[in-house]
Image 1 (spheres, rainbow, N blue to C red):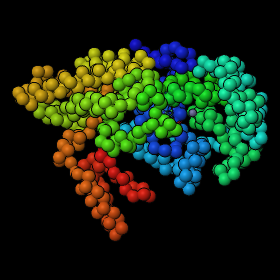
Image 2 (tube, protein in one colour; image 1 turned 60 degrees about the vertical axis):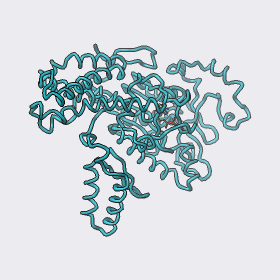
Image 3 (cartoon, protein in one colour; image 1 turned 135 degrees about the horizontal axis):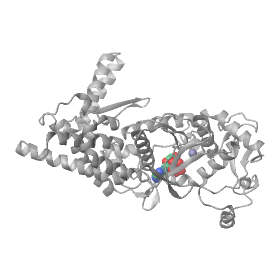
Image 4 (cartoon, rainbow, N blue to C red; image 1 turned 90 degrees about the horizontal axis):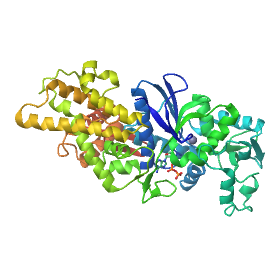
Length: 497
Ligand SMILES: Nc1ncnc2c1ncn2[C@@H]1O[C@H](COP(=O)(O)OP(=O)(O)OP(=O)(O)O)[C@@H](O)[C@H]1O
Ligand SMILES: [Zn+2]
């Protein structure tokens, strides 16, 4: 079977064929940085992280770009509340983004463009839209004229006439914002500067870009006219992605993306978890409470990526239990490899980096598992369908581990067990699951929170006394025990890995 994916644009599952053979250009609409990331963002980032890992695993050279929206009314509001600046708020939450996502084992994207760094590309696009008659200036703003683009609505399946009929009662024609537009569905490409807000010079006067145009500009600047996969949450299909298409395609005369993929929402009591609704749990709250990052990953991957999932304590508890089984399997080689007489170097114990990490003879033993895994995932990235393969292997290894402990021998041969274990480690790595040996340390043996705080104090004093050798040693010793320190202007935070 070969990979096929559900394309929001065509509403069909289609064979996956890239623009350029062997290469995938992929763009994800990332976060607006005015608060800590929540579990909904974790879901989106985990899903696209795993899509990227899988594409790499099956041999594609993937270029993955993810943006940060660092100009927005919500960022400005936060800056006002904190008597700080838009830049400072954005910087702080970008830093926090990296900290949280790395804790979840999400690999860094190849590039992280920001709206504020893309001002030339944004203005160039608006200028071209204006020249082609798709944009018009009004009172210092510039708007996109949706009626000009005959294909408007093709992604979301919406039709301007129906939308107009539905909205007519809600549109307040007295509203000055509406009065600036020729059509109520026209959207801002550029907004005139308001008193006290950050602004950039432009041919239309001082101002700042609208949200949709930044993604069109970033895709074009970083990846070109047509990319293979454009992703984001399903909440972005309309209007954000519809507007991106409208902006980009009339300028380039080419499709913006071959495949439009959207992840389902994390919901709380049936409603989207979102920063604006305030019904969210941040990634750091969840992890600091002791939920294992890999349990969060399992929680996310247990559902098909397009379906909504409900966040409940029970669901997280059940994922935590599930991860315990997976972890047992992943640590099998570390625990029993020697006893089974495997000749293993440190490299064998590393998580797999692709098909090549399993030799061809091992691959043939492991084939049924690998084939089933591929078959599931090739069907529209059905990661949840690939998980039973991992659990079957993990349970089998767990069972053999118990027999070995109690009877001193295993039922299956050491070679087969080794192939099964390496298959598990390799396939688990494709989904981003990784178990660390130090996780074997029981809670009793590990450092208490109080002891960690004490060592951090000691390190602080060492730094003040400029005894960097000592402060580095304390940090390294903590790291060796799975405690990561993060220094920032507000002091030192820590977390267990
Ligand atoms: N609850 C959620 N479940 C899954 N994905 C989400 C969820 N919330 C946001 N996303 C996705 O995360 C990315 C960043 O979203 P964004 O920064 O707009 O977050 P948000 O919480 O929706 O914010 P706001 O409430 O201010 O709109 C987008 O791709 C979005 O679709
Ligand atoms: Zn976007």
